[in-house]
Length: 115
Length: 115
Image (cartoon, rainbow over all chains, first blue to last red; front, top):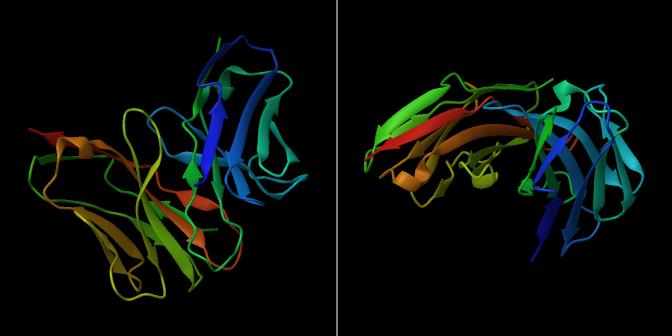
């Protein structure tokens, strides 16, 4: 069966510090990978998605970047965090084939607080 | 671009009763998928139910069922025999079947189940 791991679960970082959140998927190959952000009590905003190694699409221009160095690894980064980067970050994966009703499967999330 | 609207920020229901959560969406596509996700206090995103737009039959999963009205672009979720464990934030989501793999979420409905 497929599993998705996301870490760390919580993170407190000062403004201006770097960020690295990591997500890995097991039990499947060539998945689509996603980073979402959720502000408190709100819906999910898509930040990045990837359909393959080195292929990253950015949905929202911002202080963050994403990379996919391996097939099942997705990393969310920032060189200098802003207060507005605080939130709950969710990684997700789905099967690749368009036309197939494949839902997104989410990790447990990372609660990031920028102080 | 597709948009998803959940007009009920909060709903409440008595235990064992039935509740319906509303969702509407805007799209020019004819082939797409719709989902309901549940986010309990743990903040993990859990898939509740999914519907293919080409299917006229409404999806059901145990106590959960949908009322899919394609012409009206409406996709409501009905929870029967509500249980305390159903208390959560519920998100409606849209995914194109032909043009991209990302999921667009509504803002969510916070469901409270009263004993």
